[in-house]
Image (cartoon, rainbow, N blue to C red; front, side, top):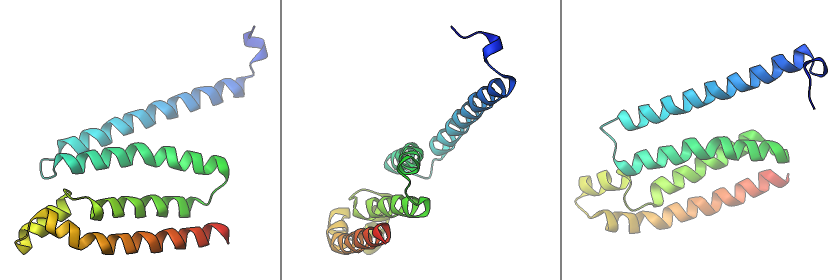
Length: 134
């Protein structure tokens, strides 16, 4: 059983600090989600992509920190993956707007863009594996 005499002042202070930082992080997270969904100039898919990115980035960085990975490589890889997803997806804003501007369908544009996105993804995977092992 834990009594107050067994819990020093600095441990109480540290526990309170961690708790309030966690609350501040949650408030910031809700503010980010509110800002994402408040925008009317982006589509639902872009909002969903940003929400996934906001949720995944802290999880990925925490797991990477736990295994001792280099944070710049981890965050760079996460940003590269999100960029690949933006270019390889058939119905992102970039694909739809470019297709409208060129007079093609989003499917036609995505099919012509996909080989280049796959080449860039393969080169990124090779580069990140080289950086990770050396």
